[in-house]
Length: 509
Figure 1 (cartoon, rainbow, N blue to C red):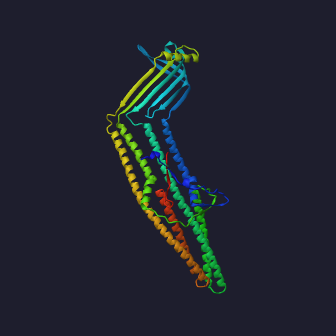
Figure 2: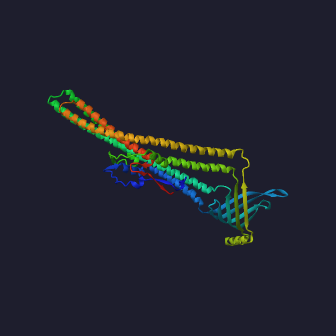
Figure 3: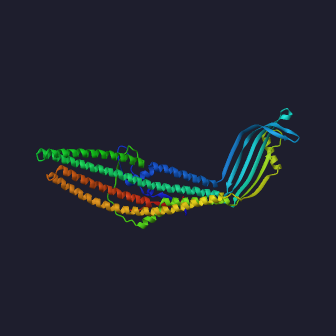
């Protein structure tokens, strides 16, 4: 798996153009694409998960920086201590002297990390010390001396016969970052679908409001005609009461629809990150071009693009690293280390600080250098099954991850088959309901003419109005079902079959 050169980013950011500016005093018309653009940039969910992916990216960069040199400096100004010290005597009991010191200085170290996991280091340390002691056996006579300590050292350290843990840690960090990137891409696609669901819910409620407003207008016209007929004596009084009740019922429906619409608008604005005070109007195209969906292509796209599969593959890679770590518990481990340093201690009895520093350098020349090299090996002879069981546990976890990957692929294939069938079914239902609406509108127009001619009562006209409203609601519901089925297909395959394009682009990390 070549995950180290793959990063997913949604094509929406490249294809969707910038929308118009928002004005609190104007109605902001929002298309579906505009709603997606706003949500992917302004919604709480996107902003939150962007921070999460940034955090894992910085974690990866932090681990990667372990291969960079390090320069450290610290000072102790001052470091002071006093204590009681026990001194053993060959021919007597121990004596206890008070000792104290005051140090001022610092140290500097530079470490160069090798690609093999070892390191070279250069360090230096220098401090001035005022050292004194109180001799208990000499009537607490106090002795005092100023001295300077200087040290310059080179060291080398290299683990052998084992995995380069720096590279291993960097690989783990990179896989974690890639996993968070996959999850963020999945979050974006979920947001697109959730925005689609909320968008079309608002659109449907606006459509229902328009239906109820038309129903109210028709019922008011029927009431007007009924009232005229009654005034001429052509209708009984009950007809006028029925028409008046119908108007009141339709007014209540309009008020209820308005309340539902405003509530849905607020939820929609909250979802996409829009200011709640903005007045919005959603714009959608009811007509669309039919497109074909190849079932096998849909399955192949889903298996190639779905983030769940990528995340499972990453989990397998991470678990393989855990298996290797468990196996290392029973491996031979070696280490090569070496050091070489010069140390000088001032030997002058008194003097200024500068004289003491020079004295410590002179002593460094005279004193033999400190040096050493070591080659160490270690191997656990017997641990009574600890490492064996740890390795078995890691291997079982790996098998679990592999089973999870296989099951995820099977679930995705079943899911895609069901979604493709639902898209075709929703499209056919929409075509039927669109034709039904055309017929229902014409039928109601005829009923209105019959009512005006006195061939129908207001109650019969109200029944026809109800039938028309139900057909119109079925029409908009079938349209919304179709659009959401297509949006779900896009989300689950990461592929836009309407425009024949993938939502993913391969990029290097």
